[in-house]
Length: 447
Image 1: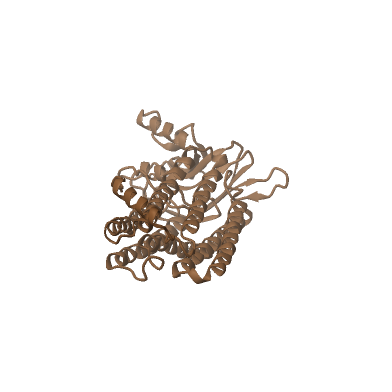
Image 2: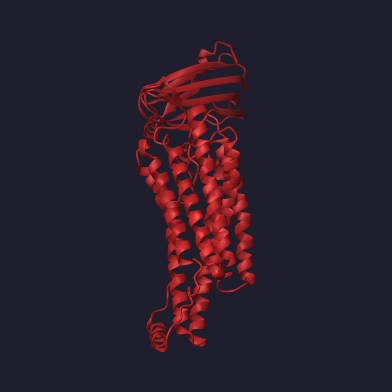
C-alpha cells in the first residue's frame, strides 16, 4: 500500500495550485516501496514524485524505463534537463532555495540531490535499465524532473527500492523503520482474535442479557483481527518479494468492512440502540445513511491513493476526498451521542428515576469524551508522531495508533458489556435522593 502524506509537499511544490496542508488523517497505508509499475502519459509537470523509501547503508534502486516518448522529438534539446534523482525532504527545501536565488535553473543541476539517470545518456534509445547503489542511510524520494518547458513526456516506469540484509544479503523491500511491521500487525491480530474469544465467552456466560449490539461488537472485533492478519501477510510478502501476491485485495476488503462496521457501531451505541431502545429514530437513521456511503467513498479513495501512487495526476484530488470524507464521518458519529445525552438529561427531570438516569448520563458522557480522544489521537497525534520521528523508528506511529484503537475497543466492550443491571442498577431510596440532588446541582454539560 504505497502512499503517504509526506509526499504531498513534493506534489504541491510541483503543480500550479496552492500547497496542501494535511490536518487530519485515518490509519493510512504508508509508503512501503514495493515493486512499482507506473505509466506516465503526456505529462508536462516539472516534478513527478514516485515512492519514498528509507535506505540503509546497503540500499539499492532498480529503475527500468521503457517506451520513452517526447512531444518534441528535436534532438537538439538539452536532455540533461530530463532525468531521475533521489532527494531527501530537507535537501529539497534547499534545492528550491537554490532555484529561487538563480544559482541553478534545473533541479538536476543541484549538488544536493543524487542523480540516478539523465536522458542525455539515452543516445537515441527509448528505454534504459539502471541499478543505483545507495550507501547513505536516510529517507529519500525518487523523483523525475522535467526542466524543459512545454515538453510532454510519456514512459513506462518500473522502480524497485530495497535494502540488502547485512548477514544474508536478502532483499528487504520494506523501508527502514517499517521492516518490523509484519510482526507487529500479526501480534495485534492475535490480540484481537484473543479478545474475540473472550467476548464470545462473556456472551455465553451472560446470554440471558445479551442484546443485538453485543453481537455487532463481536463482528467488529473479528473483522479488525482479519484486517490486521491480511495486512501482516501483505507486508510480509512485500518485504520478501516486493509484491503483495493478492493479500492487498483481501486487506482492502476487510478494511472496507471494518471501517463501515466500526463507524456504524459507534453510531448505534451513541443512539442506545438495542440496549436502551429497540428502534432508531428518523434522524439517527439519517446519520447511518450518511456515514455508510461516505465510508464506501473513503475506501474507494484509499484504494486509488495506494494503488496509483503520487505520480498520478489525480492523486492529490483523491487524497483531499479521503481527508474530507474522514472528517465528515468523524463529526457525524458524535451527533447520536450528543442527542442521547440531551434526552437523558430531559428524562432525568421528568420520569422520577434520577439514579438510573444519572448512571446512563455518566456512561454516555464518558463514551463521548473517549470517542473524541480516539478520533483526535488516531487522526492528529499519530500523524504528528510520524512527522517528528526518525525514519528508522516510523513503526512507532503504527504501534501508537494500534494501541489507541485497542484501548478504544477494550473500553467500549467493558462499558457496554452484557450485564443484568448495567446501567440499570437496583438502587434504594437514599441513593435515588442523592442522585436527584446531584442532577440538580451539576452544571450543564458542555458539548
